Length: 197
Image (cartoon, rainbow, N blue to C red):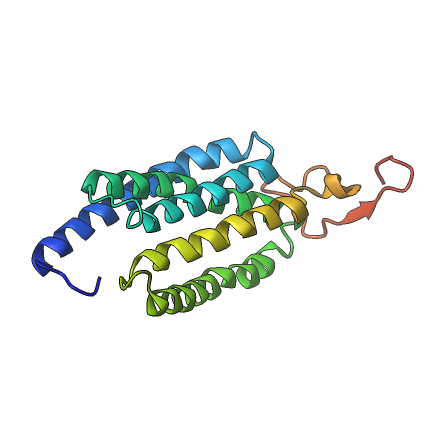
């Protein structure tokens, strides 16, 4: 914010908000991990991304709605934490379903670079949004713009992601690939006649 009446109080309040978010995110990881193994991952990931985006938009639009309640900010950070916790278990499950144990470490290592890339892009986008400002304030757009982008990407993910090879007509040749002692030469075969090869 461009002007802060009491910096010390502001830091304490931001600490409360951050703690509320991280607490819900951490608890949510356990819950989401359990759910991710039992539901439609495309829909589950869509819900997580859309909920995360909308919670950010709600935080940014609080200025337009003249909301000055600390409870509001804590509540939407908690909601955002729970929705964001859906992402990691969902994408790990999807990646694991596509790659066998023999090459999963390499694939996951390369793929996990998205965390750093996302943080860099997020910082750039948020900084640009804050620079533009909204009604002479520098913070609302910093929440709202990334939120809108996340909502759009939620639709893109829902439209194009394929959670499991079988959804693309591909079956795993080794039925034991998900076990700890699965062999390193797991492979996939496209089914032309609907039968496993």
